[in-house]
Amino acid sequence: MNKPAVQPLLRRVLYHHRTQGKAVEGVHIRGITDALRAEGVTVDIISLPGADPYASPKALSPTKQARPWMKWVTSLPEPLFELAELGYNAVAGWRIREYLNAHKDVDLIYERYSLYMFVAVMIARARKIPVILEINDSTTVYRVRPLFFQRLATMIERWVFRNANGLVFVSGAFRDHVTKAHGGKIAPTIVSHNAANIDKFSPTPEQRAAARAKWKLDGSVVCGYLGAFVPWHAIDQFVYKIADRLKANPQLKLLLVGDGATFPVVQAFVQEHGLQDQVVMTGRVSHDEVPGLLAAMDMAVLPSAGDYTSPVKLFEFMACGIPPVAPDFVPIREVLKEDETGWMFKAGDLESAVQMVLRRSQDSDNLRRVGQAARAYIARERQWRNNILQLVDFRERVKGR
Image 1 (cartoon, rainbow, N blue to C red):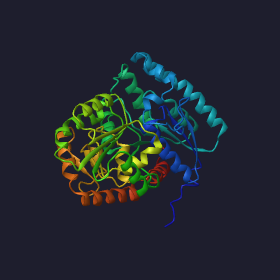
Image 2 (cartoon, rainbow, N blue to C red):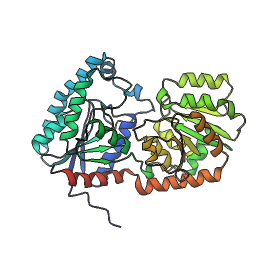
Image 3 (cartoon, rainbow, N blue to C red):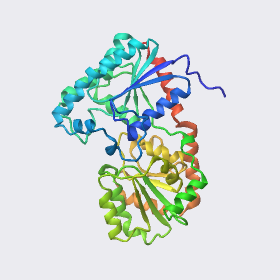
Image 4 (cartoon, rainbow, N blue to C red):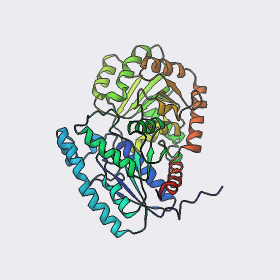
């Protein structure tokens, strides 16, 4: 079957973002950029100085990858931090104008939306260049760092969401929430969940064997976790819940990959309860080690997730043929089919998550069946190329708005 045409509909794209370009946001930026470039589109990225998403970190710890000046800015008192965010429009505006003056063939400005950012939309509208925003954040959702200038941030966001040519949301639940919060008066929208490329998540049997031998996992059913040890991911609470039942389920081992604020506490708990043989904690690892660690897993658990986000790790597990056990937040229900591509438990009910992991660990044939179906789903519908084909079609529909 012939590929749908991306060129000549898109020749050059400016991708603008104000993130640190690491961790999950880096995965998403590289996914979209690489997929566009694979179709022959020239993509240039304007980001915070020192926030190149292609400067691959050596380990899974975004907090340790931040530049000193980034750490200093984020440590400012909230009012000053938000004023710095607002002031960055002057810097971004100058850089975007300089870029557009040098490149007259830009067909699309694609921006990963950040609070207080408005200048890209203002410039694009003035120059009649389509501008589409990818929405992963909003003033209308709960924030770990509460807004000080809430009314100002909301006013700017409302203007931006109405004046962009289009908005790309990571879940239908998030789109519906934001649309309602802004009175339904926003630009045209699409929903584009996260994705994962099969070719990057196809670990070999040799990688599986090596990882399982290194971490002493042979002969076990391995339930994995990959990500940050932070309170809102609840991996610490999951370990505490399952601890007393591990010895009664000797076939099961947990493989926990990553680090973060709660890592030392969980590690101390595991040692104190003598669970080192069944709870393997790798700490931070290089990205080169990740494929082997994923290959070693037979299933995976996401103890918690955002109620409006689209967890990248969910798609990466599925791409590897690892069936996930995940909370039934609406965005996850939008992509996961119960007992076909994974299993869901009631969000917040970690006891249910524990019971599900224990039960599934006793049926290796079912794990393989669901894992194969999950991988087939990603290959068919949820690779990054699917996202950019949807984006190109969307741009054609909204470019004259």
